[in-house]
Length: 175
Picture 1 (cartoon, rainbow, N blue to C red):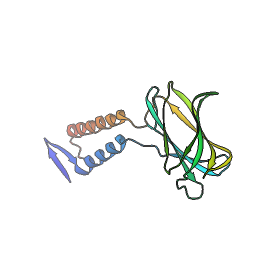
Picture 2 (cartoon, one colour; picture 1 turned 30 degrees about the vertical axis):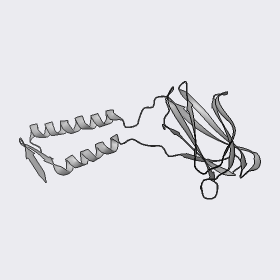
Picture 3 (cartoon, rainbow, N blue to C red; picture 1 turned 120 degrees about the vertical axis):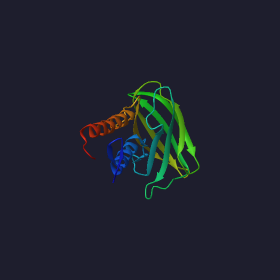
Picture 4 (cartoon, rainbow, N blue to C red; picture 1 turned 60 degrees about the horizontal axis):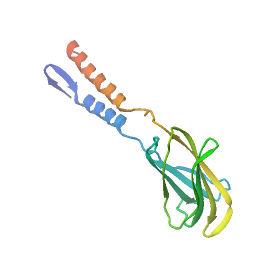
């Protein structure tokens, strides 16, 4: 099927396909939490940041979840502490804290400079019972990111489609 306007024949399927591709390229991507076992294997720790790619000076939430190692359900009553390191320097930390409820904890912080950081979560107790400290470490890259397919890619596609339509009109080639 094609429609004609001013002598230009354009396939409806071609236009719909181009729109679908542009929609896919311009849809933002969201990161899933990273899940790692603690060094002793007693728990799994889920970790993510909000926003997924923090920028220096902006408010960032560190979201940490404590998961049962067998079925990844939330594990209540955890004693833990968190350290944020840049190289060998600790730039942020919270002392040993108890989380009583299920669900991830959210810790607000601000990164002052761009760079690579390590977030170290140390578990010291489960269900009111002390355990030998176990850790899980996560890497965060702070700073402006270059999206794989950003708005520029959408503009390139739009210009390409317009170019194809113009060439088709001038050469009387039918899409």
